[in-house]
Amino acid sequence: MKRGLLANLGIAFAVLVLVSPAVFFFLWMLSLSLKFEIDNSSYPPVFIPQQFAWSNYQEVFNSNRFLLYFWNSLVVTGSATLLGLLVGVPAGYGIARMKAMRSAFVILIARMTPGLSYLIPLFLLFQWLGLMGTLVPQILIHLVITVPIVIYIMISYFETTPMELEEAAIIDGADRWQVFRHVAYPIAKPGVAVSFILAVIFSWNNFAFGVVLASRETRTLPVAVYNMISFDQLSWGPLAAAALIVTAPVLLLTMFAQRQIVAGLTAGAVKGG
Image (cartoon, rainbow, N blue to C red; front, side, top):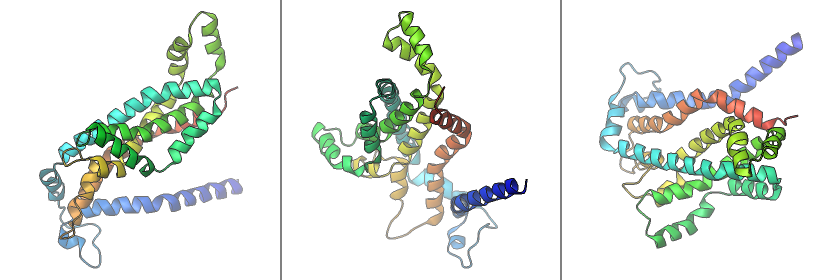
């Protein structure tokens, strides 16, 4: 009884130590976004202002074309995620059923390789094709992020799905595509949901691709926040408000889908009997 209590207290303390810095930085960013500049530069620091500066959020939307950049992020992330699922789910199924572990290892290497390694050759390719200044290069290069995530998650998930159902469908005359579509895919939907959520998170937050490939009209939100930083003046209130606007969609998605993430990852990590 006492050991169990100590173990629970130890786990709670470890979680507190790991999570508290992130929570503190988020709350401090929220505080910055709701304060006037005189409060943001005051000493000692003011955490809760006497009057909230909602004008910081209004300034972000009025002066930085954030609605356009928000739409660009939606288009890029949504298209890259959907294309990643269309390619990655069947690829993960094929690799899992063929037990092509070398291919899985190559996918893992592609996921671990820094995205900047792909950036220069793809930049030259998009420039040669005349696609620069559009959203197409960003969508295509984000597949470098989304496809490996989807494939690797689906490989581990399809490896745990029961083979008996697929074998029964094959005996009944179904071909491999019908087996995938009507048997394997419905069972693997939790894994698809996890792949979708993680692909959205990594694609939405990507900065390096957008800052190189985007024009003034095709910037995404992370690039737009970066362009708010200038050498002449740094307004912490609007900058923090913009950062929160970028963070909010992914944060809300993670909060509402945390059960699906845990259930999907757990199901894909345990071998079926």
